[in-house]
Image 1 (cartoon, rainbow, N blue to C red):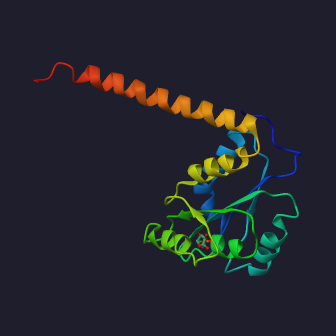
Image 2 (image 1 turned 90 degrees about the horizontal axis):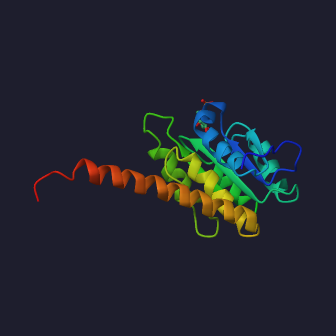
Length: 175
Ligand code: RP5
């Protein structure tokens, strides 16, 4: 699905602490676009623009958003602080931008206190964040669920193809 998403009220918000996160976060945007999910993209920082962050999070549901993907690196407080100010599901993306290669961001995002959940994906795995958001939206959207089923079929076919090629390559060995 590659239908245009412009002009429709966004269902997903993709936010990140800096434009330096964008090369990683682009994969989340691409996944949403692949499934025709309307989205908005913002640079919002928990540390540098905290007022904007709280305004964004606290108004997100009323503006029609259904899910928020938040990426940040280093002392990555953006996903957790956004989750503290909204009841929408928040998916956190640890961005591996520092000398700690994302372990700092991963632990900052995943170690949330009880009561304030953030669904955390792997370091730099923004595509999974996008796909998880699509799965959440598919709960109430049968067409989206069918599209996800199709993607799983394509993914399985690719693995079966690699399996066939690998079996063929090693077919002549001993045993
Ligand atoms: C974090 O600090 C951002 O999410 C980014 O990953 C990191 C570095 O930001 P810049 O100094 O590149 O703006 O808040």
